[in-house]
Amino acid sequence: MQKDFRADSTCVSAISLSPNVSERACPADILLLHYTGMIDGPSALSWLCNPESKVSSHYFIDEAGNVTQLVPEAVRAHHAGVSSWEDTTDINSRSIGIAIVNPGHEHVYRDFPEAQIAAVIDLSWDIVSRRKIKPQHVLAHSDVAPARKQDPGEKFPWEELYEAGIGHWIAPVSIGDGALLQPGDSGPAVAAMQAALRDYGYGQTVSGTFDDPTMVVVTAFQRHFRPARVDGVADHSTLRTLERLLSSRPS
Image 1: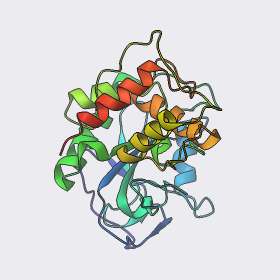
Image 2: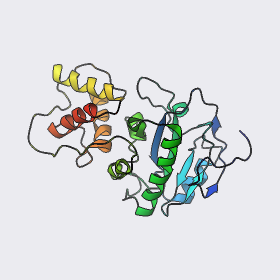
Image 3: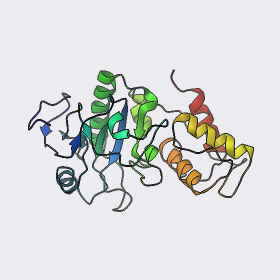
């Protein structure tokens, strides 16, 4: 990669070069959002630019809303890790990665400041507009790596992004009584749920058994699309929200 580069977005206020890159195997068609999951922003930025870490993202947004670009969009940043979406596994090649400063679930997970989310919206809009990224391809790290990751988590305001024209979203169905599927269940209803999750893009095997891997995918779905209760149990609210999300998916 060149030693210096021009920012891809006018939202960028600084460049901090990361050496942790490689060549893309395909064009980017996913915008992938992360939290940093470290104790503070400077530590996270330093780590993303440290050759020993072997990780990076294209963009980094601190809590004040300042945007730093670490990797040119034309090359492959190392932010997704072992992951999959729509039956493909090289998500690093398929995606632009934004790291959003937040300590995460391991370090007192907290709300994202308004200035930071405003910057996320501005940058995300710029990226999806320039690259013609589909709404259903604006994803959480936990969507593509549900067994390993929780970020950006249930506090991330996906609805605000949707209202700004970014991503796919519907209002979640209210939590209440009704049929549910839970770990240990099996049968056609479980298989139908698994098929719906797979149809949306999740790396979900259709086995007809509600096993541990299914529970982690349901949990990831809830973090993104039904964050009021994240428990891995496919209650009426979760199932109907998934159904409505599929039926409203942009063509």
